[in-house]
Image (cartoon, rainbow, N blue to C red; front, side, top):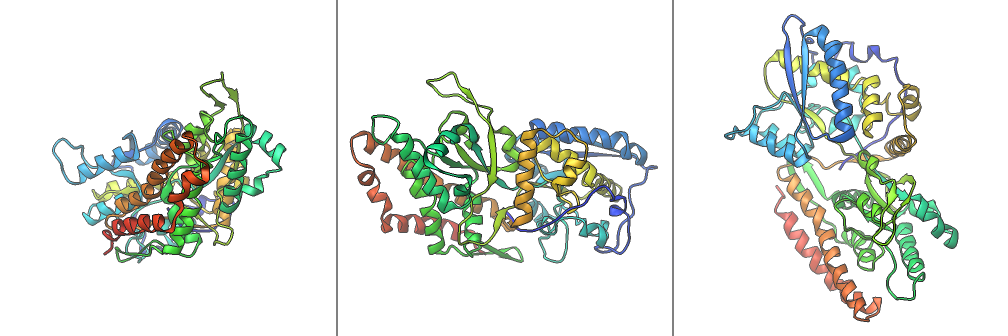
Amino acid sequence: MKTIKYAAGLFGTAALFALASGCGKKQDSADASDPVTLTVWTYYNGDQLESFNKLVDEFNSSVGKEKGITVESYSQGTVNDLETNVLASAEGKVGASAMPNIFSAYADTAYTIDQMGQIVDLRSYFTDEECAAYVDNYLEEGDFSGDGSIKIFPVAKSTEGLYLNETDWEPFATATGASYDDLSTLEGLVATAEEYYNWTDAQTPEANDGHALFGRDAMANYMLVGAKQLGCQIFEVKDGTMTLNFDKEVMRKLWDYYYVPYIKGYFASSGRFRSDDVKTGNILAYVGSTSSASFFPSQVMTDDSEGHDITMKVLPCPKFADGEDYAVQQGAGMVVTKSSDEETKACVEFLKWFTSPEHNIAFSVGSGYLPVTKEANDMEQIEKSGLELSDSMKNILTGAVTTINSNQLYTTPAFSGANDARSVLEYALSDIASADRATVAERLASGQSLADATADFLSDSYFDSWYETTLAKLEAFQG
């Protein structure tokens, strides 16, 4: 989770990686007379892996061949699999593979490996002008010490959007007058979700069988970025030490705009991801990563029907109406591990090539991730690239670029235990909401009204209990 603002331009960037006066003294580039083979570990799969490997092959057959650099790419499976394998290698566990030259990482994993002294600070390999070409906050994510270091190098980023089953939204919108603008704020989203529940409930003779409108992936993003919008930074970090700011009023508002509509049936989650819930017809819309939007289903398949085709509408992620303009910054960067100077220079050569606008845009179009330079982070430039851009990917990237350019971006700062602390936020609200909704559903089935079925879950004392429990868990991670 993360912070920013930016702009545009494109292929006049031959000078981008050439000039002098640096983020420190720039190191010499790789030498073709001393061939080097680099290993890169990622968590990419599907279209993302295919797009990445295609660019690796292009590098190997062009600049790599010219400079004696061969890059070998290996997907480790999921993000968690990658983290497990990297930590095993760093700790020298029996049976673990040798450390790769480069691996994909979020700040928490990179920070852990850095504390073990195994990460290269890439600052001296880039000039001031080269550094200025990248979105500022993307570089800042890897500056653990606050002195301009580059411990995580940005290669592709994402944010969040609202993805809507436009086909099944239209009958509801026609009947009620609901509009896309109603979904731009969390307040409007909750009100619209209640209206949708009541509208679908009225379609049948049974009571309390309305449908949920909305679901959410990445609950930690909701809590961290939502808090930021409301003026609270939950994890404040200085010199690797975390100070907790778990403001009770802010947490109550987050509770009221997720837990409350969830237990009432206006929000829902049942599949592994919310795109699964759209596919089964359990919800019409969800907030999720722009890099995963390509998984939005093309059909709804319910238990009692043969299914029907749907189209996707991409909208901005809803924000609190009275909040500041913050959106999440996510997407792992690349970490270079300590090895020979020749290998480090070869790693930098590859990373500069990969993040040049031409190649970074190619990866974006193929994967749904966003470019990391200011020049390439513009839809006009992406469309001018000449690359085939499907209508779906165009909608996804247009929404993502708009979000990036109109918000400050926020990402969780690195500190010891950051991953576990984030995990507390990921499940603290969603787990209790899911469990309590199941109880409410049982009560409704037994004939209770919605007001009676939810009454004891909506008391101040019930929220207070959740707040104190969650606070105690998070306090364990303070410095």
